Image (spheres, protein in one colour):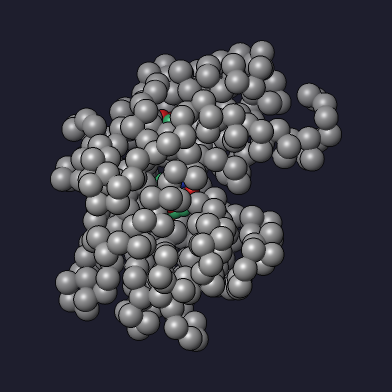
Length: 321
Ligand code: NAD
Ligand code: UDP
């Protein structure tokens, strides 16, 4: 990678912390900007050992002023779990709108490459399957999820406007469900929730009848794709995700089996506007970035389960209480 100094906004979060780590290992200097709205500094406490790493506690909805050259700005700040963004509706809209503007202004000022972490949620409850980048989506603009979906759609529009008007070298990635170590066990997303419930011997809370689908990508695959996007000058949007589509019930039963748990399945109400199906068409990522995921669902789940098992033992001792 020829770029030398990166700013990762939301760098202490699940994806952000993996990105900071990878960029440091690639030899970049990394500045992590985060207000810890949905994360803790523990995610990045080890990063200073890997290379030149600076942590800035700052809210991206306030003006961002960072001295010195910056070669790339990655905007990964936003509540991302439905439970988080439904609890933090205004903060989610603000970081998607004002935070995106401030991070774009930073990239413009520095002449930096800019990457926006957008989402498969821009497709809403899709009527086209699998979802390709040319599909404009089916989003309820006033439903409870709109705080996230519409913020990201606005963020995409703003990034494209800065590209066209101010010639900022923007790149938009639409990330599909990604999982791995450092997700919070209580963030409410299906995979960490099921793993934690299975480890604690609690019922696995499957929403609806569990027939809705998702396609889960392991974090290392996703980070590789983002790094390739940084190194390209592609504008996108580019879908990034693993097309291995499963029902949520299948996912719950698979996790229970891999954990070796006797937990029951408890069917709970589905969230409002919960998308029924989701699978990325990743042909564009293949063409532009030469990328496709390499880690199978079972391998990724095993790695994630191991990480949560160690967390569980550290927090509660080696018991199943
Ligand atoms: P996360 O909640 O773990 O990380 C988000 C980070 O942003 C946290 O560290 C949080 O404190 C920070 N943040 C939030 N508001 C901020 C603000 N105003 N100023 C500074 N920092 C702020 O979530 P994640 O899963 O790591 O998601 C990271 C990004 O990737 C998000 O933009 C999300 O929309 C996008 N994304 C993630 C997924 C996924 O499956 N993980 C899928 C699609 C898109
Ligand atoms: N889900 C579930 N049980 C949970 C959490 C989530 O059945 O404890 C379902 C949720 O309703 C959705 C799917 O799993 O249909 C994926 O949810 P998640 O929050 O992981 O991500 P989303 O794709 O909705 O952003």
